[in-house]
Length: 70
Image (cartoon, rainbow, N blue to C red; front, side, top):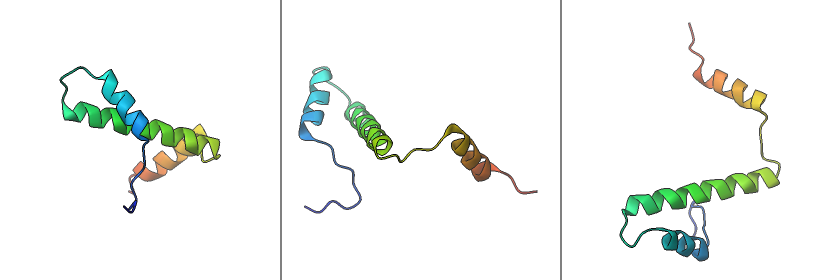
C-alpha cells in the first residue's frame, strides 16, 4: 500500500495505546491519543534533525500571520 502524505505509526505503539484504555472506550478517544503520540514523535524527530525555530522566530511568524492591514 502506498503512503500518500500520511504519517506512519508502529503497530506496537497502537497496541500499547489500546492496552492503556479501559475495556470499553469511545473510538474518538483512541484516535485523539494516537494523533497526540504521532505529533509528539514528529516533533521529537524534527528537533533531532534541527528543524526548530526560536521563540523569537515563532513570535515574528505569528505576528506576521495575524497582522491586520489598515
